[in-house]
Image 1 (cartoon, rainbow, N blue to C red):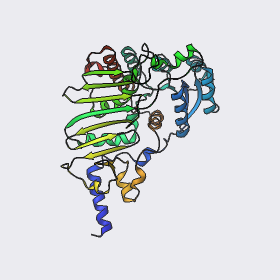
Image 2: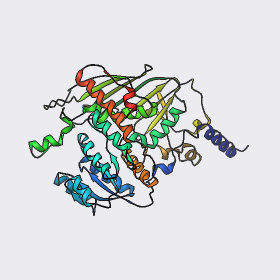
Image 3: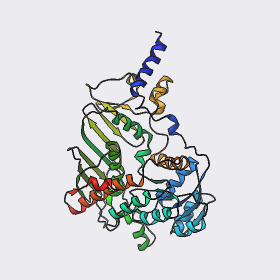
Length: 412
């Protein structure tokens, strides 16, 4: 056998073992292809709304025909990004006047999601709702129920489920690469005040709803729920209890929402998830870690790595895997189409995602509409993970352990 043929043989043998694991293709990393542009309206032209407009422009599968926001300055800023779109001060007006609208993206504050998403569902539109899905358990249940009665695509913005690197890592996980799970942990550390400045006291309060204890789910609900959903998606189950603590360490500006929090979740079999979120220091950023008897997987939204134990079995494809050094550990980078890239001598080009997670979530929404298929993250999926975030925040504010009923989550 010639060296070239031997290399092709090893790659083919490795693909036989790992083919299902290396499922995400290079095509999945590129802009979504839809047969015709989808007429779309955006409600909520704040920071996230404007980010959504930027990603939709990159995707090219949507025709943003309308933007809605009650704040005129934000509305005009968004309209400058969405050239040709018409502006509205309320969702009711937008729905009444835009007869050709096929889809609505809800990017308003969390406590307004129920009102706006239900209105769009009632108008028989496809809906993409940002997450967390809602700010109460009752609102989560109402949105999940309304989604079950709709024939449209109703997608939620927990972005891990449409992230190609996360999908690749999940296929490794489902194939049993980690074996017996030992521990789960995650963090979201950033240096950010989480405060915005409004021109008047009234507007300042409106802009800083996430610092209002009557409206906000705090760091655990607003930020943590996105990462809790990753664990729920991988495991296919939810924790049964949560404890949480938090305090103000830096931003002592009159707020009541802690700027540093931690939570400990327990699953039915005793598996634990430790979570930390901080606005004080950005060291090691945002990531999730799954550890098991044979390997660990670390995910960081645009990148992912697998760290194998010395006694873990090896596969042929690992010979050509790209590796990165982390102090004394060596991680195998999780790359879409790794076998194909290795055969082309382009393995390094596949490290990391070319776009951010929001891009892939919106791409999935547009493709789901075009193909009439279920989205990566349904309202029910989002209602469950949001509920866990709500209960974690409840544990923080009460100072007591809070039970999580998996049966109630399954009913959503």
